[in-house]
Amino acid sequence: MNASILLVDDDVNLLSSMKRQFRGKFDFETATSGEEAVEKISGGMIPGVVVCDMRMGGMNGVATLAKIKEISPDTVRLMLTGNADMQTAIDAINDGSIFRFLTKPCPAEQMEAGLLAAQDQYRLVMAERELLEKTLAGSVKVLIDMLAMASPLAFGRATRIRGWARKVAAALNLPQRWQIEIAAMLGPIGLLSVPPEVIAKLHAKQPLSEVERKMIDRSPEAARTVIAHIPRLAGVAKVVSLINRGFDGSGFPEDGPKGVEIPLDARVLKILTELSNIATGPSPNRADFDALSLRSGHFDPSLFERVRAALEVDTNLAHGQRPVKKLATAVLLPDMVLAADVVTADGRLVLSALVQISETHVESLRNLARLKRIPDAVAVFTDDFD
Image (cartoon, rainbow, N blue to C red):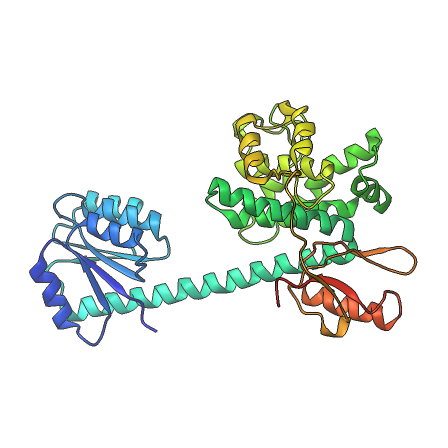
């Protein structure tokens, strides 16, 4: 499929001429000013290629292409100019990151070759992006499944924090919501370096010794080391490494940033992680936030109140019970949510309640049921799939 092309020029006759000349060969959209082009792209029209004239009334070509690069970085940008002086070329390349220069008047053969090359470049960029995103998604899924199998307690904790993070991200309109969700799920990867009995104490909200507390506090560094090797997750790795860093400069790492120098996602997850250590239910209530407020210096004060507004539930209100049904493992499906812990006959936790199960989890539960390690009846919420 050919990428669409946006022509930007204040000469309406030239736009009409190009549309006639290449009718049937290219899918053209037009804009008669840089401002109009930026407005169209900001409104959701994402062209594969932009051909922009240099000299126009209002926003010139360099400023237009620079703004388009900011809004739609994957769009391939071409400059059309009748005055290709050295400074124009330098500005266009540095600010607009153009793919090619085309000079006026531009022969039809040269214009067609330039547009075809730009479309090929766009397809290449999108193919590489798709491959990278699939690799990224697969790598994240593998790590999450490993966490679920190796430490159900840590996985259940991460799942709850991710649910809270989604609500907070929506309420605060965070710009990169995917980043905080992945950080919430992958942050506990570092807990795999902590002895299981310490994780069990943390989950049971039992007091930790100083040595045990340091193990927990330093665990994000182990997670950062793993995550940093995954393409495009450098930002997530940084957020994870600072989850236990206090707003006042306390916590781990000792030489880390403090205050607003700590990334916003890390400041949010610091609050949610500490909240998870206190809250006993699926949603935090007033008492949970009141208890957490006693350590207010550890958190961004204005952010704390915004998180509280987004998550706090009124325990005086009666909440309807979600419908629950016990299903044989043979009919379990990925994305179902557990309504109760799955525990082996000898008391070992397999998966925590409120976990959304994956294909790997389903197969694991079926194998455990075949071996009679768990009952062949798993409680799940039915309102998600009835």
